[in-house]
Amino acid sequence: MIDILLISFSLFLLFIASYYDIKSREVADWIWLIMIIGGIIFHLIQSLIFILNKEPFLDYLMDWGGNLIIAFIIALILLMGGLWGGADMFALIAIAVCSPMTAPVFILGDNRVEILREIFPPSFSLLSNAILLTIPVPLILFFYNCFHLIIHSDKYKFHHESLKSRIAVLFIGYPRNTLEISTEIETKPWHFDFLEEYDQEIGWRLKFRLGLDNPENDLKRKLIIVDLIKNTNKQTIWVQPSYPFILILTLGFITEILLGNILFITLSHLIP
Image: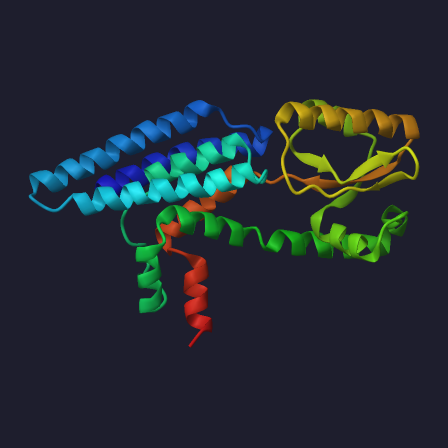
């Protein structure tokens, strides 16, 4: 019953967070604070039930604590590597606090999956599931670009770009008209980023970014690019869509509860 209440409580807040993430790519910190406080309370109640029933509770608390430590380490590594922002780190830790310490609803795979599940905590599995769920996105972008390349070939003309860059960008973004760019930067600044920057010597060229800057610098850079678009009368520009990562984490959380680690299950069927 405690696990059902914990999962219901977590999903309710995650759905609210996902809504705001889809709408504005920004989620209020109070959602994560409530998740953390509520998760701690639920897990302490579960521990108290173990004590009242004279059942061992230290293993439960150690598993829960280990899950939090792994979540914090993963989030810190991604944050320091510039791949995540502080809000993403906060979100993963909040979800880890609320993760139930029980087996998945559906047990798939063989004994190797069970062994790995004992080694790798839920926070690792939900992040692994979330990453796997994003794998189709580059392929969708690639086929979208291939289709539009035939129809609108003029939008796919590159200058000063290597063949490797021309192929890579097909998996990352797409060209779009610049007519409403300035309006969208004001209303939806975090829904996309630019894959082109202006060079005073050679003009517009592709620019790939792996890390994240702070929101203030990112917004300032985007506004500068918008001004350059206007000044150079640029008709189309390559953009990279940003994804509602909280929604992706929520789906990873759901699949972890239902199935466990999708990667481990898949490998158990592929490796004899």
